Image 1 (cartoon, one colour):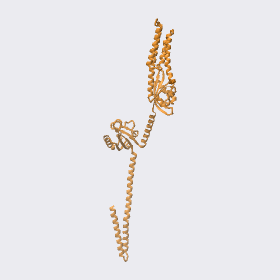
Image 2: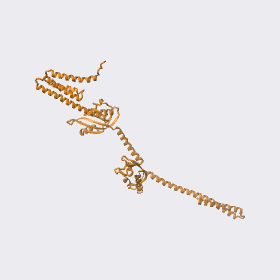
Image 3: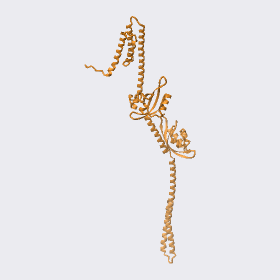
Image 4: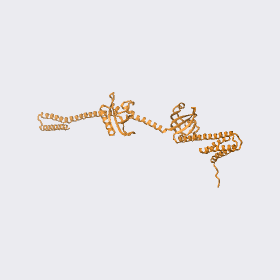
Length: 440
């Protein structure tokens, strides 16, 4: 069978235990077989310290006890006949040193374990957490920072955080550091640039660590990425601005009426009712502007909607202290709010211009109808005059002709007779025209 060649890592892992065993043996031999008077046994602390690199805490305690036993054994082998007090004191000091080193090393290991556990917990959070010294050099860099900014721990440690992330501050850095030194804390929004060039807006919290003398030694910085939230807030702000402008241009406002709670008016509604926004929105305040002719209508509308939980669509008139008038179109629908109660959300449109235009149109139409009637009457009168004048003119003409015929030396009675018949026909035609007019 071919023997397995140990790797460098496994060789190093075996080297320390072997060195520790050889050191313990050498110390025991030197302490037992040589007439040295100094406390050779105190060198066992080296074996204890070496054991910390490959043994658990319990194993280290056993090594410490073993080293103490070896020191006591060496003493007994050398002084079993005639004990020497100086050697006994040196033994006790050596054993005490072994115990003290073991105690301090165990406590240090536990403190290191606690620190490592805390560091692992900090790695679990998605927030970026890092520490830096007073010269802005990064001394700790958690997994959240690696994920957010793109630099590994090895790349970030020792670098200047402000230079690494191209930090943009909301105020001069000197002012921030002055507040940090004064209060020990600072909070604000920063802009960081990642390794790949992406700009992040973060909510940053700084806490200062001080030593026992009160001198600042480090800064803990925690950052929460709020880039998406800031974009949403900016979009919402733009939307609200656009909505206000749209309401102003369209003379339309929004409102929320809660029969059992607080009401809400948009800025345009306040403008329509000519109230300052310091006035609390309410139905009672709105009724102060409703024209007396429409108060009863509006009260019935709201009472019915509140009782039946139905929407409403109504036009009302407002009367202001200077006797000016506005016309509004109010529409609302019931909705359930987060508390589970019903409120009415709606819109108010100023239709004063439309109402005045409608009134002017109605007036113009009435005037046009009057003119049309007068014109029609004039045309009818002219037509009647024309129709009646024709037979009357014929009658007069025939009568004059008949008179001339009868006034001659030899009147032609037959011709006169025909003329009179024609006259009678024209008279009848005139009568028929008058009858038709009466029927019309």
